[in-house]
Image 1 (cartoon, rainbow, N blue to C red):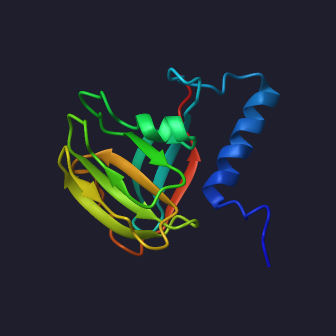
Image 2: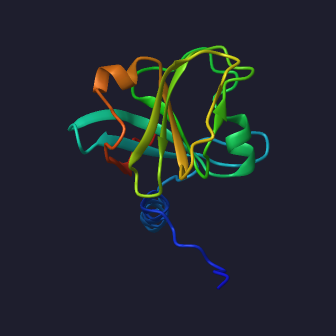
Length: 160
C-alpha cells in the first residue's frame, strides 16, 4: 500500500522538536542562511556505543539547496564542526578544498559505513539503506574510534 506520509527518523523528530521548543522560547532557530534562504539547524552528535562526542556544532542540511551547498567553499573544518546531510546515501567532495571523514547512517543513527580522510574531488557511496551522511573534520573517525554498527545519538547543539 502507498504510504503518503513516511515515518520520520529519530533525527528528524529531534530536530523538529528542538525547533518547536526554540520557537516557543522565542529563540533564534535560523542559524545560517544561504543565498536560497534555506537554513541549517545545529546539532550535537554523541557515539552512544563508544561514549565519545563527534561534534557539538553540527549543521543540518535537509533541503535541496543546503545539501547542494554542503561544505563547498570551506577552507577548514574545526574539531566539533560538521554537516549532517538528510536525506542522503552518497556524497562527493567535488569543488571542496578540504579532506573530510564521512559516516553513513540509517534512519535510527546506526553507523553503516565509515570513510576516513576523503580527499577533495572524490566520491563515496551510495550506501544501501543509508538515510543520512555525517561529514566531519578528517581524523575524527580515528580519534573517536567510531566503527560500523555503532549507534549515534543526536541532540541540541550550540546556538550562536
